[in-house]
Length: 293
Ligand SMILES: [Zn+2]
Image 1 (cartoon, rainbow, N blue to C red):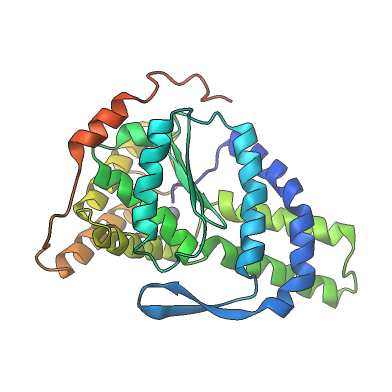
Image 2: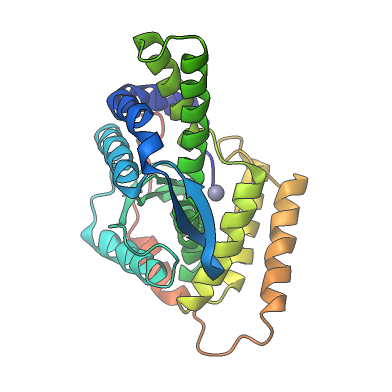
C-alpha cells in the first residue's frame, strides 16, 4: 500500500534481488509453460498469469527470509496471535484462501505495511501506533491481502520477465548472466517501488469489501486513510502516495466513502473493536531504537 522508498529499503531491495536471482532465472526458463487463467478478485474476476502459485510462493519465501534477517521483528506472541487472527479472518472471506499466509510486525517507527508475493504480510509498529481501533488495522490488512489476491506484485514481475525474455530473444543473448541480472534488477522494484494507482484503487476496493465480510465496520477504512493522510502532512518519513492534499489521497478517501454508501444500511454487528485495540497498542514498545537500522 504504503510504499517503501527509503534508502534503507532500497538497500534491502538490492539484497533481496540478489537472493532472487536464482528464482528469477528459473522463472525466465519456466514461465512460458505455466500460463493459466486464475481468479484474482471478487466476483470471479480472472487474470492471465504466466507465473504459477508454486513459483510465487518460492519468490515470497526467499524475500521473507531476507526481511526477517534484516529487520527487528517484534517479539511479542500476543501481538503475533492477534494479528494472525485478524489476518486469517480476512483471508477466510477473500478470493484467495489457498495460500499459507504469514503475518508479522516489524519494530520501526516507519508508518508502513506491505505484502510480499505468496502471502507474507508485514506491519510496522509506527503504523500500528497510528491506528485507533481494530477496524482501521483490519482495513490495512484487507488492503494488503487484496494485493496478494489481485497478484499485483506478480503481474509486475510477469511484465518485467516478458520484457527481459523478449529482449534476450531479440538480441540473441538468452541465458546470459548480464541479462539475468537485468531481469533481477527489474524484478526487485516491484514490491518496493509501489504499485500503480489503479492497482491501489483495486486493493482499496477489494479490501473494503473483505473487511466488511469479515465482520468489521468498513468505516474503519475511512478512519485509516484519514490517519495516514494526517501523518503524511506532518512527516516526510511516511509513505509515498498518501500525503494530505495529494489529490490521490482525497480520491481514495472519497472512493471509500462512496463504496460504503453503496452498501446501503450496514446490517449485523460490524465491529470497530476500539477497546481491545487500545489494550494491544499499549503493549507496543514505547520508543523505537531501530528506525535507522
Ligand atoms: Zn497498496
